[in-house]
Amino acid sequence: MTSLLLRDLRLAIRSGGGFGLALAFFLIVVVLVPLSVGPDSTRLSSIAPGMLWLGALLACLLSLDRIFALDWEDGSLDLLATSPMPLEAVAMAKALAHWITTGLPLILATPLFALMLNLPGHALGALCASLALGTPALSVIGTFGAALTVGLKRGGLLLSLVVLPLYVPTLIFGAEMARRAADTQDYQTPLLMLAGITCGTIALLPFATAAVLRANLR
Amino acid sequence: MVLTVTDLSVARGSWRILDGLSFQLSAGQALLLRGPNGIGKTTLLRTLAGLQPPLAGRIEAAPDSMAYAGHLDGVKPTLTVQENLAFWAAVFGGGDVEDATKAFALAPLRTRAAGQLSAGQKRRLGLARLAVTGRKIWLLDEPTVSLDKDAVAMLEAAVDTHLAAGGAVLAATHIDLLQERAETLDLSKHASAADIVGAFDEAFL
Image (cartoon, rainbow over all chains, first blue to last red; front, side, top):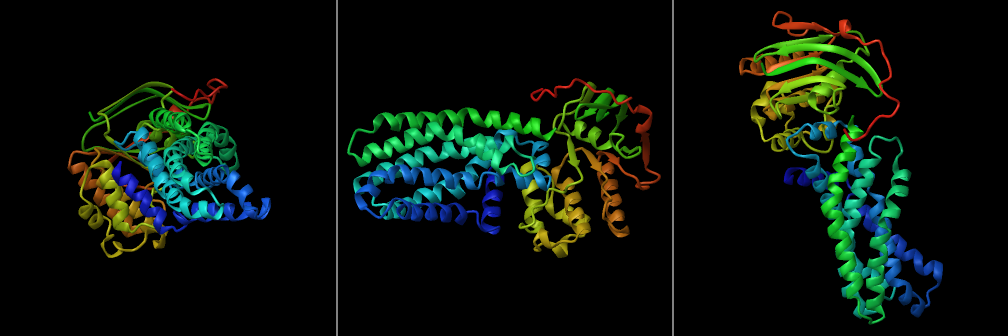
């Protein structure tokens, strides 16, 4: 499993666009928001938590179709399926590699981007914590969606349609947690819900992903 | 016997294509699958590799004993030859990268990115992967595609080494590979009168 994770990270670095793509997309979304709603700083700071969450979510979506598509095209997926490594472990390694190349850079860049949207300073910690808790779920759900659409020509749009509704609970509780922190309210409830969703998806979805891959490889 | 197949039926999509197929493979034996295009050679090999379930019949082999080499080589263009082989060796926890590199004359290409290899060199890399899996039964699907005469000789030598070490080989091919050493299984006798096996392809068998 470690060797697959390391290979995927190496591929992401070598092929370029692995780390940078999602980050650049996130930056563009954050830059576009003040252009569309106006530069009024109080208005910006009131929508900042939601916008940052939405931007991170869309940035995550961007690189999903590459998770299995490249391995499918060059036959690696067939070979991984016949290897001693269970497909559930393949799914976990793929999700983890996606999180490291997409979720982690987003979390690290968020303090800077939050500044651009005038997020209240005291909410920054909670926003980063909510992203750190929520983005693993986005990667795991996205891996499941990528497994569903693997082998389809131009399955990217279908993938977005499948995955976005599944992202809704994570978005609701993640953005709610950040919003409550910005309004200096207690945010323990959305935090626990978000943590629960993430734990649940990590525990269950790799099995679903593996089952779907087996069906798609036939 | 390393592999015993009894009364096997396989389907591609929802079409039954092979019926009542039985054969055995023992250690040190090579078996060539013959038959016209579309007879089901690839489907049979994929079924044996465990990538799809058989419609009927039994496949008896030790678990994790098959190494499958299909039409695609599973080679990552941005990794070097060495890294590609080392990855598969790590995943399968098997054989020696050094030996495999030598057997297919890949040593001079070791540090080259696989994306810069020619089709034949890439194929050699894909076949060298078989040697690092450490698996007993090699399932080869048209292994000689885009190989030149020397590379075919390398493949035959690698197969000989594998057979001598107690392995077995099942290959689908149209050329005269392994002339004296291999037996032949003609699949056209087992072609099924293509009938549909249920309109609904159940996903989770």
